[in-house]
Length: 161
Image 1 (cartoon, rainbow, N blue to C red):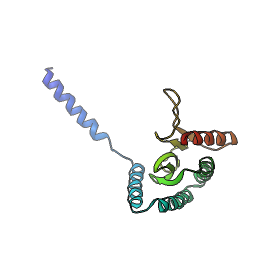
Image 2: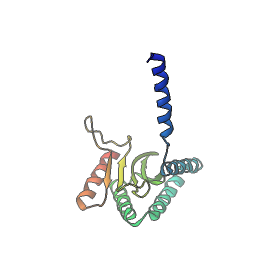
Image 3: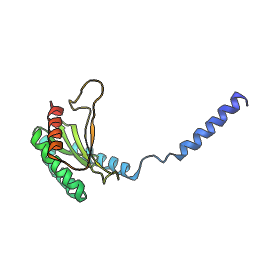
Image 4: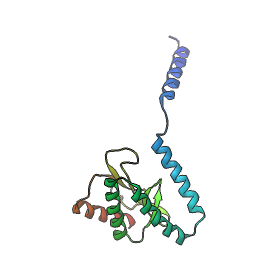
């Protein structure tokens, strides 16, 4: 086969496989729409109003979660607030998050939101968790033991630095 025909054949195959990709899931699109609403709402508020509204919005989002995720989110919310009172609660892609100077440091992601088998507690790149060349930034959470709570509390304190 000539190189030109091979190139054309490859291009056709690439186009066919590109069509098979569907893009974002409904859950991902929903999260992006929530983030757009959050940004729009934040743009019209002062700093004090953002902090007060953020706490209420986070508690409302937690209340909407299924029981298992709600219990985890409530406990993590209390842990973050106790470990790093300087962090302000806010929603981030429709999920509870905690920010310092407007930048998200850590967040909770419900298992129900993206239909996963476990919830996630994670840290953004703004968190001071650097440890060598490789370190974890998100953790699967199915339940919280006192040891788990102590680890998360220590990580949150370190993340805020």
